[in-house]
Length: 195
Image (cartoon, rainbow, N blue to C red):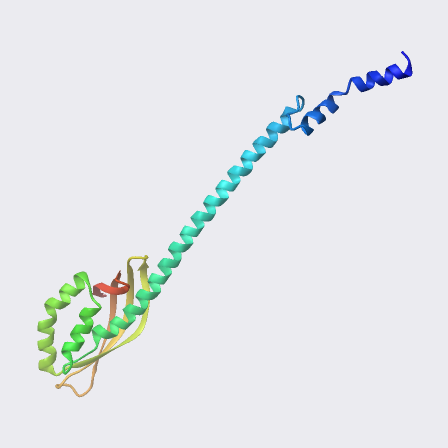
């Protein structure tokens, strides 16, 4: 064969690698080397799975973070309410009993409201007869349990009580457990227990 014939033969019969390169350039899958395409397909599936898991983890974390923030907010609001309410429920003046009792009932709900309403007439009579006054002072308070819809708070409160028969006020030291629930944007005391 002459030199011209050899070059024609070489040009006329491209190598398998060259054919694969041409097919890839055209966008056609190569006839040889299918394993790398399967591998990249598996890699794409793995990347997609990792992305799905990452998004699910981010959403779950976001939801948990929102729930924790709501619980923290509820706890802070209920704690402030319980401290103020402890003063309200342990302070009274025989000359302003209507207002004192109305303030206590305004911050109450459920079981405690029913109990206080039922006992208020007897309490009113006892306080008025003794010409008694009392002032509550919160010494400390802490959250016992908390969730977004119910918080239990322990309050330590001193109650200084005076009446017509005593010259010096008597100090009662109380530890009170309050259970508070939200109602129309306010936290109300549904249960109050002396501990």
